[in-house]
Length: 120
Image (tube, rainbow, N blue to C red):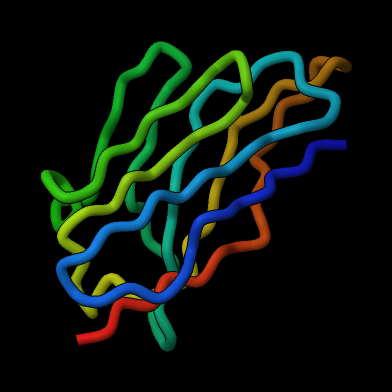
């Protein structure tokens, strides 16, 4: 079993910053890509940013320059530093990980989500 646990969400004023964390645990052999997605009310879930085990990153256009994704491979943890937050960044943020288990099965896992609310 693999679990992803997110933390760091909350309420912040526009222009403020938050740092999200997501720790993966369980029967993990390796994690390739890790990413953050978000879903606002009434909208589809969208990619925020992703990072490979080698450190290659990609961002959604609207987040690049404000958000920074990073990871600690030794801790199986991915981070999302969010700066210059805007009310339109309000959403539930989900962690995603492409995991190969000890039994050599490979699957994508999701965290439970953490709420980020940006007030104007």
